[in-house]
Length: 261
Length: 323
Image 1 (tube, rainbow over the protein chains, first blue to last red):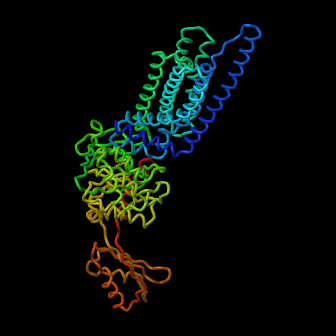
Image 2 (image 1 turned 60 degrees about the vertical axis):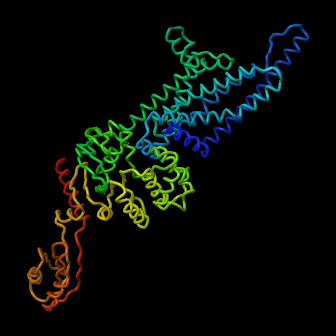
Image 3 (image 1 turned 90 degrees about the horizontal axis):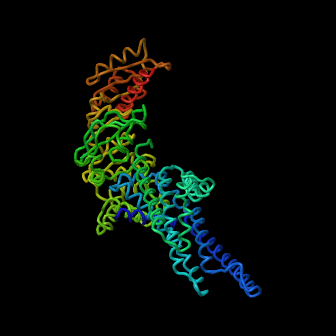
């Protein structure tokens, strides 16, 4: 446990002196704020239109619960943003250690490959939590508007953390395979974008395989959580991806030592 | 402390380390000598558990690296060829990180880090970022991380390569201080280093052991000798024959080689056993015959020459094999 914490702590500290991590944090926060305010303005306009229709015609084509709709849209956009932000944070996790030669220190220390994998994961996940913190004032702002659903906020945040954790674990695995950080980032983008949209491939055909593929869609799994629906199989799905990513990373770290350096 | 049995490492058909066996006793400093690409780094990586061997066994302090890797690694301090540092960390923070990885109890961590900083004389840069340090200081940080947990066994891979002569002698002094506290396995391709600090030298080339002995014995066994070179001006016919006869008669001289130069002088080379000094006798013999002594130098054939001879023989043999 101490090894895991030691590795995680060093990873977080190195994020805070890394220009890459700072840029990711800054731009993620800025774009999140932009999406949030744009959506509020857009849906308030829609709500006003709906109100006017109600007055003139006695009926409205649509009814809007602004806070809930904004939250759903917001969390779906955030999932998309994370897909672009997190590979930049995971690309160097193992790749950098190989490049700097510090992997030699780690692997000749009395620690296990599993501790290394979990420590690295925990470090990146810690930074994800830091990235989520600036979102909290946005929800506070929304709450000032009156009716809102704390449950949707909670499940939306849970969804982001679960999705992010899965993305980090997969990025960590790709990082353990690569000796070049750009290749590591590109590989992770490829994997995450494929998993995100795999359901659209599946919906084009109707077959057992299509349904099977849709089962792995990050989007389909995550979208329920943005609606305030927390179901056990979605949670288990994300946690399984985390464990799979960590397991593959541990296997790769062991195997790195068998290759010519 | 370290025992290596029939260790081999193959990459495809290339054999990097070929059936190596040796043992390092507690408190001993073993020098690992060989040209670049001889298999030194590969061997050290197998002993530290970074690379798995293709065949053979390594035990450290009785712990087999395959069966009990964590126990074995706990006994090791390892400085790879390039110090494994995180440039963005300060020296102190980095050493605390390494100390925690090496299982120093939390209560003793600060004291251990302070001691390592003191022993490697890093006090003045302890709170600086490693990226700001010179190469010599970085190397000392590398040494500090290897000793921070006071490991019984130290493995140092070319600790002085890529340093300037001043930094090199500083690091060499530090290593000399480590003697006695740790069992040390040290690799280098710089010869004076080995004869200075090592109890035993291990010459390795192309993955095979060429010779193992103390630096002194190696010299004797491989016909180390002192050489005196003279240049003499002699009047008369066939001067080189006369010079050879005169010098060969000196006590202690085992071999004489003399030849005429285009300038009309004679160049001679005397060989004597190590420690026999015939310089003044040779000078007297020349001057006493009325010849003019133009130059006289003495030198001893060093480990370097022995090493070159050993590895050159091997290279020639390999070339023949392939041809």
